[in-house]
Amino acid sequence: MDKRQEPLDTESMKTEASQDLSDLRESLGDTTFELASLKFALDEAAIVAITDIKGTITYVNKKFCEISKYSEEELIGGNHRIINSGYHPVEFFRQMYRTIGKGEVWHDEIRNRAKDGSIYWVDTTIVPLRNREGKLTKYLAIRFDITRLKTIEEQLRRTLQELERSNRELEQFAYVASHDLQEPLRMVSSYAQLLNKRYKESLDEKAEDFLKYITEGTHRMQQLIKDLLTFSRVSSRSKPFERVDCNAIVDGVLTDLRLRIEETGAEILTGHLPEITGDAGLMRQLFQNLISNAIKFHGSERPVVSIGAEEKDSVWEFCVKDNGIGIEKQYYERIFLIFQRLHEREKYPGTGIGLAVCKRIVEHHGGQIRVESTPGNGSAFCFTIPKTAKQENT
Ligand code: ADP
Image 1: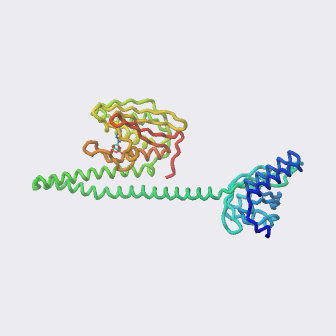
Image 2: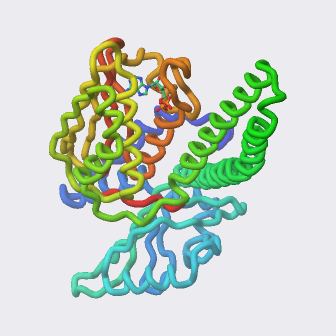
Image 3: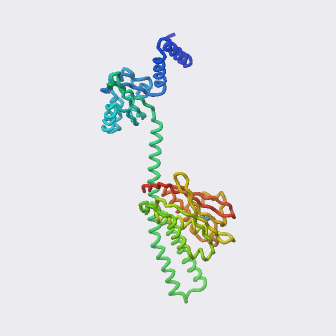
């Protein structure tokens, strides 16, 4: 039987390879044998090529031929232009030649084109080699196939771009919709008021009730629109980040909430808070929403609210804790969604947007927000702000 037609016997090939190696050991000294073993290992792991200092290819290994789909004969004597995909600017390769020409190691990712036109990416390290006299004689290029990684990276980048675009569109939509809804609503509200004022005498009790419902409905709608606008403006209207003293922010919030605090007899305990990098207006809104919720959702006992912060590696963790009604575990995620509320409006007023706004503000600063709670025994809303918060590009 023709030898070439025999099926591949990988086991015996491996045995042959180790036989070859031990034969080599016999014929070479230990150091040379070690070097040969290193080359063997390198060829097994990487795509290897050697060029002279003019860039002419003098050696390629099997993996180079496999990935480029060129034969050894087609590559030796030529140069790397054969696999150039035209993706990188000329300056990219000029800079590479400048670096290796100085005898320095160059490392980067290269997009290449194989003989059949397919594209592949290689993580490349080029090591200049010198002779005994210290003169540069060769360049050794070691490459790893990163095509799969680059494909995933590209998909991720596209998905992220798409996500950012649709987010911007949604924000824009929410803004325009809520902004444009205000006008007709104002009209309904003012005509309802006019009707009530001018025709009060001729209206019967039922008609008066109906008018009252219209007015209440429009007020609620106005509040929803106002909140929706606040939500859509979190990132689009954010100011450049600055140093923000959270003690001053919380003091301001407590002054605004003075009436509510007095009415409910709430006790507020504030620890020392740090300075952070962020948007002062948004931070004020964040504390305002969390503290007013902590006061609002109290049970039979008077509210006790504590506000504190702790340093944790690269972030500050703030917590607003209360002794209120608490939240069941199954609602931990839901309450941060827009318009999600757990109680009837009559019992606890609100539009269900406060925590969604908090989440957006925290994420806008690069942090995270979560809740921990024991139903009937209070909740703790904790959020992180990176010590070096960077503004997202919106
Ligand atoms: P709103 O307060 O306007 O209803 P939020 O988005 O601020 O909207 O809160 C969503 C829901 O999460 C609330 O309706 C309430 O059920 C629950 N919640 C928020 N804060 C607290 C708290 N401190 N204690 C108990 N429940 C809370």
